[in-house]
Image (cartoon, rainbow over all chains, first blue to last red; front, side):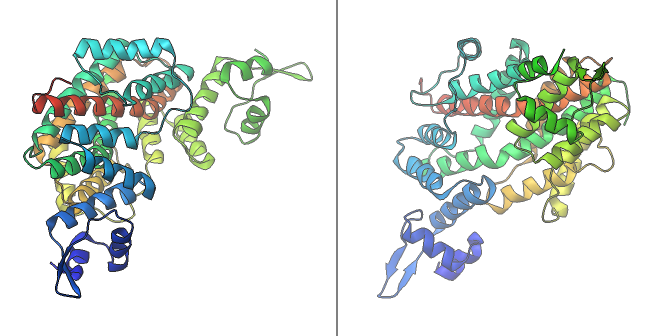
Length: 205
Length: 205
C-alpha cells in the first residue's frame, strides 16, 4: 500500500507517520522507483502499537521508543513481553519493605511463578503492598492468592489468543493487550464490586 | 487525640490538615475549652482516604471533594461505592458504538449483573472495547467472560473484608480498595502473563 492508505488504515496523519519514520519508531517501507515507497501490514500494526502506547497509555515518546526497541531485540515473544513490562514500569521511588518483599516471594512460591532477572515486578508489587498498609488497609494472603488465582486464569486465556509462530506480531499484541485490556479488566472489576456489595446486603438493585 | 498526633498518624503536615479542614474535606474535631480541638479515629481514616485519592490516584482536589461528598450522602455503603465509582470515572469523550454496548449487555446478562442508574460503567466498558477494536485487536466473548468470572471471585473476597455495620468506614475502605488495589492486581496480572507466555512456549525460566 502507499502512504495515503497507510494513513487511512492507521488513523494517523501523513505528517505524523513521516515524523515516526524520521524518528526511527517506524521501519522504512520498500522503495519503488525513485519517488514512491510501499508499505505493508507490518507498518499498520506498528503504527497501531505506537498509537496504543501514546494515546491510550499516555507514554512519552522516548518510552515508546524504548518499548519498541525491546520488542525488536527480544529473541522470543515471552522475552519481548518481559522487556516491554520492564520498560513500562517506572522504578519505585522508595525501596519496598522487607516484609512486603517476603509477602511477594510467598505468592510466587505458592503459585510456582518465576521472575526474569532485571525485571521490577517484585519491587513494584511489594511497593504497592506498602502503600496499602501505610494507608491503614491490609492485603492478606487470602486476597493476594485470590488475585494470583484470578490472574493466572486470565493470563492463560489471554496468551492462548496469540499466534506464537510470528514472534514480532505476538509481542506487539501482547504489549497492546497488557495496556489496552487493563481498562477493560478494571471496569469489569468495578461492576463486579458493586454487584458483590449489593449481594452482601441482600439488595436486589 | 490532638492535632500533633493526628499529623503523625496520618503522615500529613499540620498545615495540610488545616487546609483540608478549611476546605471542608475533613470534618471538624470536638472543641475542648477555648483553644484546643480533639480528633478521633474517623479523622485519621478520612485523611488516609484523602491521601489515597490525591497521592496514589492523582485526583484533583475537586474530584476528591466530590468523592467524599458521595460517601457522606450515600444511604448505604454499596450506594457509596457506586457513587464513588461514578465520580472517579471521567465521561468518555466519544459515544461508544452500539455493537460494543450490546457486548457489554451480553456480559451483564450472562452474569446476572445489574447497574445502578446514573452510572457510567456500561459506556466506559463499551468505549474501552471500541478502543481495542480500533487498534486492530478484539476482545471476544470468551475473554470477556473470563474477566467477568475472575473479577466476580475477586470482588466476593474483597467485599467479605468489609464490616457492613459501619456504613461510612465500609464505604471509605471500599473506595480505597478500588483505587489502591488496582496497582496490586495489575502487577500480579503482568507476572501471570509472563509466566503464561513462558509456559506456552515450554520455557522453564
